[in-house]
Amino acid sequence: MFPADTFPPAPLDLTITFVAHATLWLTYGNTVIHVDPLSQYADYSTLPRADIILVTHEHSDHLDPDAITAASKATTSVIVASKCAGKVPGAVVLHNDESKSVNGIRIEAVPAYNVVHLRAPGSPYHPRGSGNGYILTLGERRVYVAGDTENTREMKALKGIDIAFLPMNLPYTMTPEMVFDAVMAFRPKILYPYHFGDTDTSRIQSLLASAKGIEVRIRPMN
Image 1 (cartoon, rainbow, N blue to C red):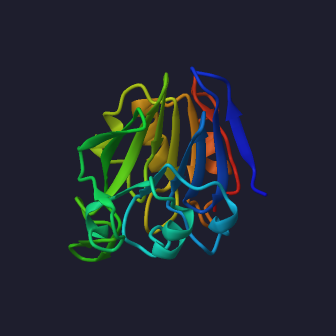
Image 2 (image 1 turned 90 degrees about the vertical axis):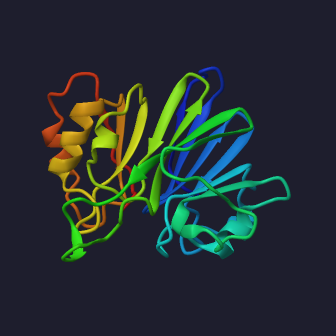
């Protein structure tokens, strides 16, 4: 139904399914993880129920309570950012810089916010403290899903990231040049631009063409 990439055991297979926009579906061994599930992109009643659901922030293209209900089972752990508190029954709020382990998977909340791009003077599209990116430690791999953010100092200080999803959608997140700046700082092995709207993804491919050890993969995540 959706395109997917599968990575060999480390120590278990990891499959990343690209649903749309900022919506992802990961399977690690028998563990199913849905990130920012949205009903407009998938019928979650037909997909495997989640063991873990992650919500990066409260905007309607990321938070869909109906999709969360459809994707959940009795034992699902739903983890949300601070501005989502009270909007999903039973969800656990993970604040910036906090971490939690679920089913043996360590989940770290990375601050996701704007510095440059503002809705109005003094009013960023994504204020600091309201949204999360998440780092998932899946066996020997670390996967970073950045959420809606710019190339913040916290992002550029990350270490040991194998797979990174970075947003590239103006005016809300990053330009390709901002993505390049961040990637050259924390150097993920694989970069997936996502949530990129009408941004020309060939620009980030060109910027990173000579960056050794960094593979850029473009998938239909506009």
